[in-house]
Length: 368
Ligand SMILES: *Cc1c(COP(=O)(O)O)cnc(C)c1O
Image (cartoon, rainbow, N blue to C red; front, top):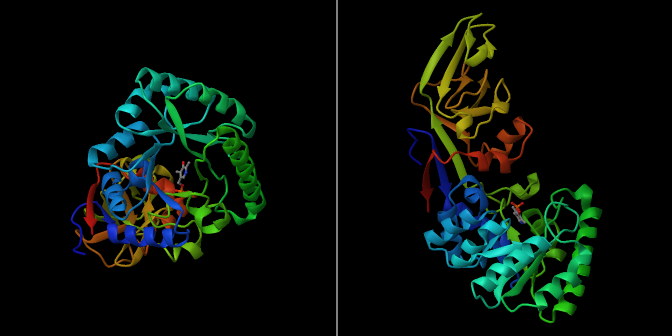
């Protein structure tokens, strides 16, 4: 790769393909694959990611909010798109753009049926979300009969899938809890399908669920973070390739004498002569304040340079006292060697957060 000359997020679609192939190799041939491309494709680029995965034959897509689904439709995604967290105010748009809602409460179910009837729909696909222990969104196990009674009164909608979400699929200390979630989902399936009278797709695994609970793949799996190259464990990370590299440049070098301060609120005071590099990424780009004051770091000429003082909106200053470098040199914020996960853990957070925080103002480039 040529070195970057400004802050750039490089997105490697070959690595995406590798991750997709790895994840699908973990499921049986009949298991469908839903690619989660919410939050700008975990901070990368939702349209390019989805179009690549559509070419690779992914069966389904999911986004959190309706606007994200519209972006995919506008980009030419024709496969079904599940909207995980719609609100009744979005239902007209959902139908107009052929998006498929997750239905997670009676209020939402009734509102969607009313909209589908108003729009003269027949058997519009919906997905019923069950809560099996995450206690975030979803119907409870004993709601099945009432859901089905409501559904039997209309022909405007048809259940395409029922699904649930694991609370701790990456944490093998919580295996017993996850197994109880799987059992409760199985109980829901048998009551629901028996009463509904037709069979539906069933799914509950996210990335860590795919890797840790093959017995819970059911008809479809839903993967987000794995596609972007992280498996939530050191062991699994070996099989995946981070697709996004955030690179920048040294804008300016300063030498700060003992007793001088650096940055807003004098967040760092030099105890000795310090050489610093100013880099154009800040909290408005996704490097939050929590990375400041010696926690977060970047890599310059293969050496770690820690952030000094407070993170500014558009810049950080890092310690390059012992690093041979000059203005214009390339800076790695994260890539597939110096990973987003390592940077995230320096500030006690997770790869999901730093990836999805990368600002839309940063230029994206693609390797395919
Ligand atoms: C975000 C999300 C996923 C994807 O989870 P990963 O851990 O990124 O694979 C799957 N299902 C639901 C309901 C989600 O909200």
